[in-house]
Image 1 (tube, rainbow over the protein chains, first blue to last red):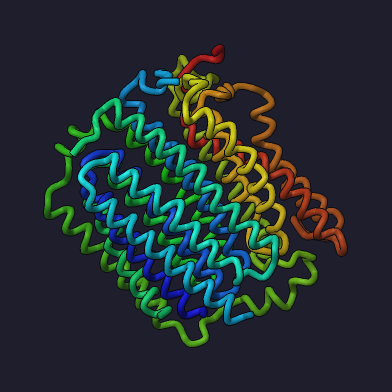
Image 2: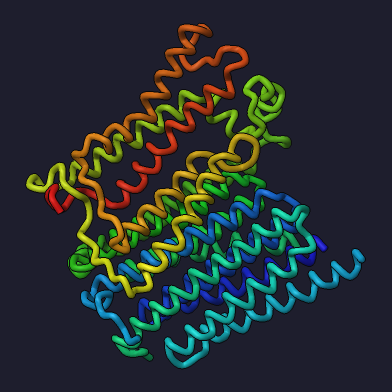
Length: 95
Length: 97
Length: 313
């Protein structure tokens, strides 16, 4: 079971590596933000799998911290991108 | 019982990994930013959700199980709102190549 | 399978490090750097350093990433001039060669260590009962090497003063950062109302369990600072002017309490920062409770940057 979980973590890590290509190529900042978000979620999944594989309970706290800070970083990034097009955040879109 | 739980873990984690794979492929191969955003949210919701579901039998306490479900809900929240925001930005500036 | 994971991680990290340096645009390099921090977290987990993994996830991934993003945004207008002034190719090759040489020397030193490597861990574990905390990292940071932690807290204050010194004269004492527009229908407004309560609970939780399990005040303070910054980013609260007395008291409260505990130790136990028998846990708690708000405010203010506006809103 532990070997399987580590293998799953390695597979998801490979997905993270592939997602990096989108960060590299991404024709716009939005694509880079999206790729970073996928990598964050993949990272959290990998951390949870590794924690279950080693039986170390505290790894869940690492995943919790990652989740909160990934949210924070994503919004900081989107906000920074919006800073170059002022007026976007002030538009109340639709109903 | 333990065999059934282990089977559950294997099946759910494999399914979750598949959705991560699908999400990554979508992110790399879909033609424009909005469709890539769609692929991303699938990986977030289903990929992580299935992995969390699969790991529930492996944790040693109810509290730990609630914690990892909470982590998934947190990722759902931030993923959904970030996706909304990115979509709005793309609508204003055009979906791009 | 673990070996495959480790080799894959190492290769990925090296490749990403090279790419981050070579990337042409700052935002792309910053995104690469944030992923680099995430991968380092996994590395620390593999090395069984959960506390370090927690700190790397908090500081290396989140906080440093946001710091670099703000810097990249601010430097956007100067990027073309910066690129024109890049050092010549031979200088860059020389720098790369020297960096590789230093890395190789470090790697050789680590690999040449005798097996098992010399370490003080057994002595820490032998003496940990005296400190009344269960987490050996906390015991080292706040009992055996408390002096280092005190000095680090003071260094953080110096960093903050350094950041403040970049303020233009007219803005000295004012509020850092630009005024953020609050958009009641916006996504950021929603997230800044829903996420911080969860983040604050998580931050206090990680601070509290640091006594016996991986965690501690530094990681907890980072979470609290991140939530504070999120609220400010959404325009729901404004950055405080740095001349406010309560702000400055919060900043010095941590190190002052730490020094006070040290003096108490000098008087009652014979050495600065020594803990009298039986009082170790309570004194450690005093230090942690005093340092937590200080660290939160320091980290938040560091990310906000130098004051740019006057004191009135």
